[in-house]
Length: 535
Image (cartoon, rainbow, N blue to C red; front, side, top):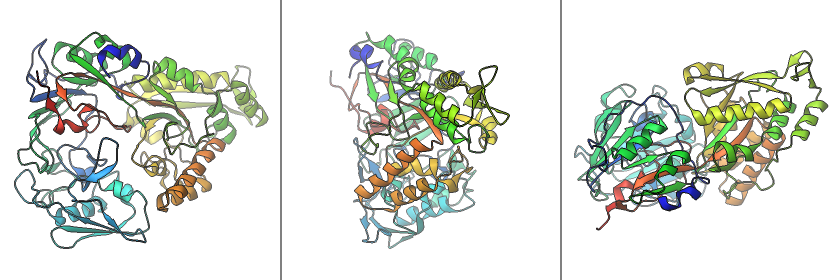
């Protein structure tokens, strides 16, 4: 897909990171106006909107794979199928699904020259699971009962229960015990000066500005042709577009209205990525209004998802009816919800929510009013929040939108609604278990709505523990049908991602992308395989 077809693409795609703010990135590639960002075919500078808090996989960096500095036992190919990385083959799985055995690739070294071995794998997983490690994602490894090395080239995981997508969890990057094991896991130098086995080495990190990398000459997969790689952290969409146009950047993630400005630029190409990235409104069960089933059902029906896609996203996405996009084989046909204001009003009428003098409904002295928070500076979340509030008002529900940082929002999540985001294409368990299971209510950003539905809990357990694909599909069908009857969230849209890239390399592609974006996703997901175009 090229820039010359952008005008049409812009109405079908959207950049992932519509986050506004003041950027502090100064000439990240060292180029000048009009010159290509990297300055040569063996360097690249890309503009991203966010950066990680840490570069340590022990603290969660790169947990979904593709971290550039590190490798996992497995990795994803262009179609998101698992392939060997530090393992020489896909794992051998026992008949009962409780044991996963990995044979390791021989001759791999960390970037400091020390050999990689099974002990590094054991160290990585045991450290993440240690209660003293500040890794917010450790619940994703809940199924692991133990991990042990059998010699230098074999690792065996033992699970507490059969966990169908466990192999997907082993794209997690492996840290070197001889470096990270000698430091404080939460605050040591390794968090900002990592050593890994990946295709690139970190050469510098100016927080809020840029991350700089160079090709790893000893990479087991072969030294990359792109020798220098820089990720410029530029939160503001307009600034990112300006710096792309001036030549400071070789590539950037952009919203359609800005990407359209490059449509006539024959030196650049546009790449669109479909995603699992959704925006949703949490409906906390501990609030007297959002905790009422009738209100939740009415809001789920009153919202005009199609108009949101058309107006807010300029056609760049699709209506969302749950965490699973309609185009996914895991989506349950028949769970689409049509916009029906009349039906929403009848649901509220029948439940005793009667219109008050000011148009806001009242039941037992409680006004149908609640706050909805969105993160400050995030234009796309703000737009979704305002549109949702407008639709709710037509049904007689008052939604008061509020902006704040996550530090302000997080303590309020038990009772206040939030315009949230998420999504992972790796496995339906990743999308749904952390979001919906009742046992994780109030666990950080897991189950932000405090959703509690025994039928969903049972189905989520069946889905993650079952090995038969048909049985798993039936379980997730149950989850999605239950969300129609008892929505804990009002899912609004799935958002497509859009990138503009200098047309000087072969190998530019995109994958289906998750909610998280930046370092591991975008056309640079496989930058280590790019080759300069022959002139």
